[in-house]
Image: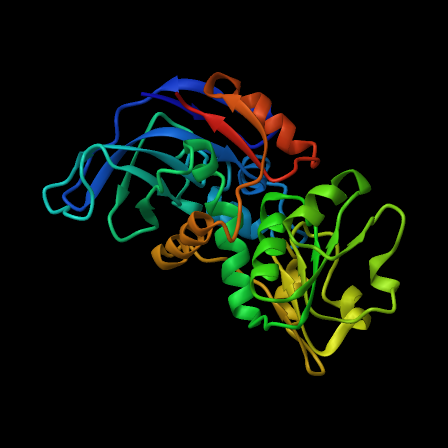
Length: 319
């Protein structure tokens, strides 16, 4: 099979296309022919090792000191089951599926094996492979953090980076929960963010949202643009600050009076993926796709994500 691999940290130029053996299929696994995958900010951070402040040493410990321990990136995929292990009964050959291996990566390839019981679910027929692949990274990140924050109907939610894959999911899930959502994004993205459910919008290039009079019950920083400490004065007395891509200070300083910071890894559970897919199936949330690239254009897809200007997901169609 063809796969995009890298052997050193750096820009998109470190990626190369390479022939790799087909993954072995264990008794409790399925083999999926990948039809679509995404290039996420997570892929960009792991590929470049440009991590939030204070996490460089931890990144090398996890991903590899001198070079990447896992040479194939890709956190999510949609495709078709082409083989099953002898103990598998939940899936059949020919099933279209959505998978979220998350930190295990290995989705930037033509095939991937996945253990049944991990985040692998049937793809609803009304979703294209591209739409399906765009759901897990942003949807599961937003869902797991909003559950930790216990967002309630009627509360106020500020989403920093509201037009990205994770931010657009926060806006939609916040609206679905009955919260009043304010999105922080450049003016060119305001129409998109408003269409997803934000009732108020802030252009961070024109206004310092940390100095406004409004106080928010929950603040979700999806891009690492702020910190818990910088947002104390705009958090409600019992407000919760979500640091999706926060630096080490957000992980260490977890409380300020009755205010709290929520940081750490997001969910990679089967249950959360199923919930995200069901929400998309019902129309409660919608996939947001900025651009689609061919499999041969993987480095160009990475280069576009590196600009920091993508809206929603960047999809790579494998076939």
